[in-house]
Length: 263
Image 1: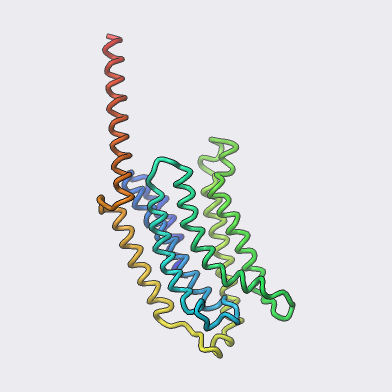
Image 2 (image 1 turned 90 degrees about the vertical axis):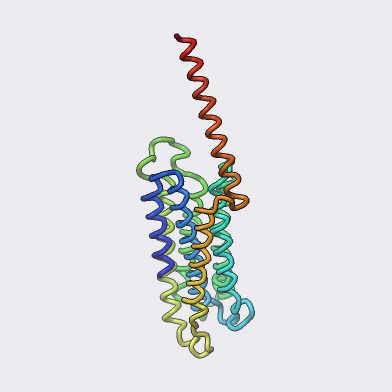
């Protein structure tokens, strides 16, 4: 729940304050990306606790799952922040989409195994339908983000209401709500099993790990926001800024020449 509130608040804040300045726009969306990556860690912690298939409890994958998810979160934030720089929009879009898709796919592996390895009515759980619906909504969410539908077929008609990014956030929130409801059902229905198998959460597998990831993501946001000498990012940003300055100077000179000819 904490991670869900963080990512929804981060998105709202970014869209509210990004118009202050160009630098503020970048910083706002850095925090947005960091909040989304925190959500991936929160989902991984909840999945490890309530969603894992019974036969995978206690194995090496179960033991390392949340730590790998924490590492993925740091990679996700770095990739997403890096995607804000560059001249080719398609590459930036691919990098950003990959940064969010990769943690989601990793987090979903145990859930997919659980859903696909149980076909009989004896082991079917009431949360399965919600988990399947969450996958469908997540697919629709990613489709709106990648396709820019419907404004791609009717430019100008959806500038204020109904454009793809609004639909992306709506479907994302619906997917998250469905995911939470499924997790709460799993928490209630599988509690006895986890208690019997000594699989209860610890501080360092839940809140402690989440706090460490928050600190790491804040450091990444600070690096991208303030340390201009950070390689691979600010070098390109400086080049883009110089290109804009040079283009503005050329345009100013061209206008002066035209004015002189007119006189």
